[in-house]
Length: 439
Image (tube, rainbow, N blue to C red):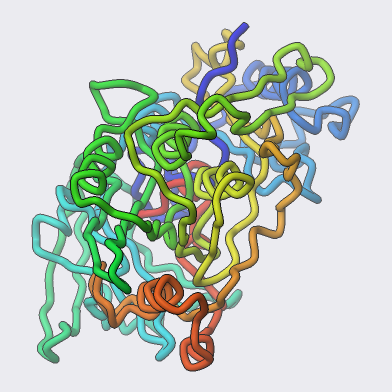
């Protein structure tokens, strides 16, 4: 049996873009589904020895309530249920919704952090750096919850649902836009450009989510291929990879990126190993690097935050034993374990369109590093500045990365900009939505 080549982090729902409190999970369709969930967990769940011996299925009003009750809470923040269509769409970027993200600046203001090109928001010209001042006629503070988070009540991801946003633009003017949710194809690459730093060409790559290209391959991204060709043609000698809002996605695409970034001299060496539970130990496996392209890098600077998770952390961990890896921004999320969908192994789940995606394996790099549930610490902690466009040198984290490549360090002035928002976009999503968070 071959393990599906799927995911290792946190993800987005349904068609990928919905209000987190209205995530379209499958409804409880009876005892048979609950039994199938519990049986599948007993067979495949990484922490299956921690499961209860028996379950009173009637005690749980929904499939989700059952799953939440039986997972290994000390470490499992990640197992979830969704539909088969939602899962498959997510990993090739088939979305529905407005198509934007947000982040808080040091001033406490809320800004658009990214906008997908072909989304309704992208087609309406929305840009990173626009301040969101009102949603549906209410100021942002009115959406704050008792727990300190925010619920913007944007509704489910169904096409046709509209919301109205008021923005303050970088030139000081304001605009109010009513935006209607629709289906769209999301892009992963938000920016790529080349800087000249200390006589060297430095590539900058803002990469949003690890998604295969729909209709081309379930394990390959043509956006990744095109980006690496751009950097090769540009003759870069250094590279900055911006993963600050990247919640994860496809392991196969993460491997594709690793194979482009590894040196030719390390091709064929161990990339990572994964370990399943004792029942499935015969499926434990490893992956070796297989060099793609001709980039020859000795170090990579990653821009990270608590929104950097899953496949983002996998790339960092895979490359760390072989390159000088530097993290600038904030600590990453912390997900050293992986998942693949289980409906293919259970007829009841498959026939009822229930996709069970629990933690099924743990991951270690070639040096054996596997326990990073607290995330990877930033080497230089620098505050986010979402008020500036991608690739703008006023962006504090990009400026710090460029400064490091020029001077070998980051100034105290830049370090003084660090702040950690109490609530970030990744906190507003669960399950599939946490891997690909977008509104």
